[in-house]
Image (cartoon, rainbow, N blue to C red):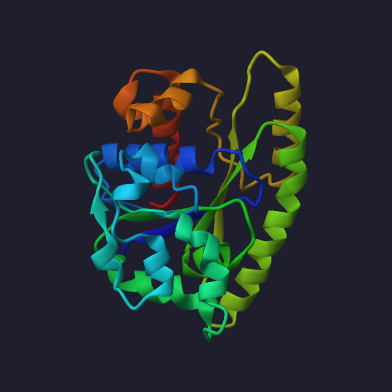
Length: 257
C-alpha cells in the first residue's frame, strides 16, 4: 500500500512545488512508482514536469469537483516512474464549486484510496493557503512535508501551519486515522549568509525530532530545470541540488523502512 505525502505551507515561495517535482524524481530514480497531484491553481508542478496547462482535458479540479475517478485523470510524465494529475486555474473556483457539498474535506481521501495500491508514493503539491484544497490534502495524507525557506518570515509562518496540521490530526484520530509530520524541510539556504544558519537553528529548536537532516541549497540549477520541462535530476543530475534531493529521498525511504 502506497503512502500519501502532502507538501504544505500556507506561505508561498518556500519550495513546495520544487520539492514535489524533484523529490518525486528522486524517489522514481530509487525505483519507486510516484504520482504527483498538483493542487495549485498556478499549476507549476504540471509545467515543471513538462505539460502545458492549456492542453489538458482533465485536471485536479475534476478530481475534487466531479464524479470522475482518479485513475481517469492520470497523465504519464516524461520522467520514468512518475505520473501526474495536473493542476488548473479552475482550482481558483474550488471553494464555490464545493460550497454545498457534504464532507467536502474528505473528497480527496475517498478518491485516492484505489490509487494507493498502484503507487509507492503519492505527493500532493498544495497551494499556499489553508483553504478547502489544503484541507483535502491533509485529510487524504498519511504524512506531511513542510518546506521552510531559510528566512525569518518563513520561520514565523511555521507555527500556523503546525496548528492546522494538529487540528486535522485531532479529527483523524477520532476515526482511528493517522497524520504524521514526515519532516520540516529547510530550503533555499544561501551558505554565504550566516542568517540562514540562524533560521536552521530556530527550526531545529522548534521541531527537534521532525526536521530533515537534508537541507536544500539555493541553486540556479533548480531555477533552470522547470524551463526545460523536467526535474533537476533530469537536467543537471550531477549538481548539488540533484544530490540533495536524492539524499532527501533516501532519508524518507530509510524513515519508512
